Length: 306
Ligand SMILES: [Zn+2]
Image 1 (spheres, rainbow, N blue to C red):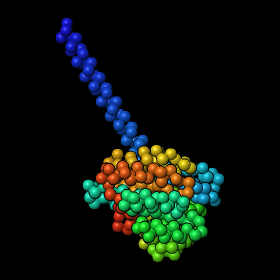
Image 2 (image 1 turned 135 degrees about the horizontal axis):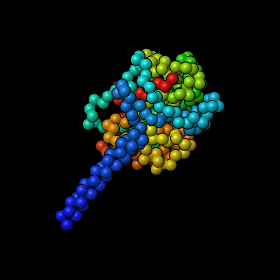
Image 3 (image 1 turned 90 degrees about the vertical axis):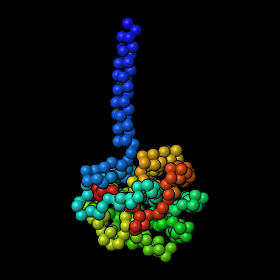
Image 4 (image 1 turned 135 degrees about the vertical axis):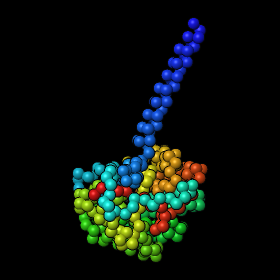
């Protein structure tokens, strides 16, 4: 009787273990799908599940069509780019070399000096994709460059009407390029599209413009960069620092060896600066080094969605 009881118990325990394992596998698969923003398309290219938000400061979309004014979460590209599109990313040469590229869009602003001070405290460099935030912002642009960080071109106006044509786009790009050059003496060739390459707001201005521009920029000697991780600091006007921190560190938790992290330096994004020291410390503790984007660095491209 005792033996039969023991057998029954044993079978029951095995049954429980199998059910528990199946549940764990299911939960892990679900977490991997929903939490990790990267997914892999059929052609092996990773795409991001969250594209840059564009209305964080109110100046981003002042002239956007009404139907798009609240479209803060641009969905990612889900389809493969045309065959002629540039490669989505340059694979890391050494998988053991873990690198993070901190990127700050939409500055300079009242947060910039604090960001620079924090970066200095940790002895690291970052990349700033700047816009014309106010007349006289040249001094801050110069400070970013003087303190050894990379300056990239985001847009002069950050108005999505720049996507009306190739000419209007480059007219705007040339304006921010000249502003940066006048302020720093640097003719930057680093570019990040407002809304990212995968933005769909541009459809309201010109069909196919992002596909065209993603080919036109390299042809004119520019290097454009999207991001493979989003801090989500633009998912609302002001996102709690704790959320920004949690979202930002997930790339390390997922084991990504090369990370381009999207953050914002717009005036309202003070919580991003609040979260920054902890984000840096986390990546340092995980063995990452910090670098700036360049024409020879790791890069990451979203698929054009328009
Ligand atoms: Zn932006």
